[in-house]
Image 1: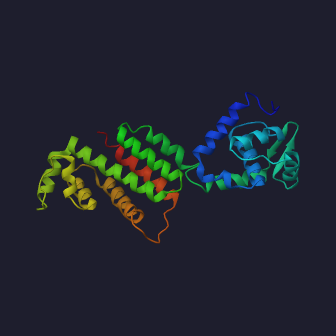
Image 2: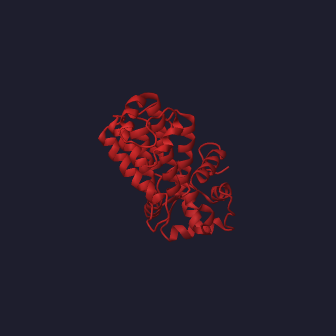
Length: 262
């Protein structure tokens, strides 16, 4: 067993397997052996908290991410030390200040890895409605898989459905009063399917505001997010960054789903 471990060797290896599964956007399997070795040393010391990594542990870390280990790991580690990527200690190698800064920048450039995802995960734990929770979890997986457009569209579907349920449970009379003023095909809602007769979500939001389902601040959030959803949901040349999708999820879960419980 490697001298760098304070506990069972299986503990960091299982943690690394879980980390790889949770963060496919890092594409560890596409890295060169040299670059993967640098990342694994960083992960072991800076993220998992090991004291250092020696050549024996490095082989185990490569195996944990299903990648073949370098044949001469001692030479590779020494070379990385020479290149100022690692620092040698009595018990093995640790990332240098240069490597720490490099990997930290890489991780922070891949939201929601270090920034948004923990907050999103904490918010989703507060969602109690099972079907909404399932949809939002899928939206989070879309975000993690670098599919921000899909994450936005799925989140919007949940939010609108949540508002339908909220109106039916708490504000149906007020909503129908405002709806009747529109002289549309549908003059009253009695079941969720009736909302489909309100063709535009913008109109639904306006009626909700008029019926005091929510205040003007929430309406502004919904109007803004509807515009983002329309951009994400239709082919265009506009780039939708993961950070925008992360903010989309956070804002709507926090300010709509959690603030208007069923």
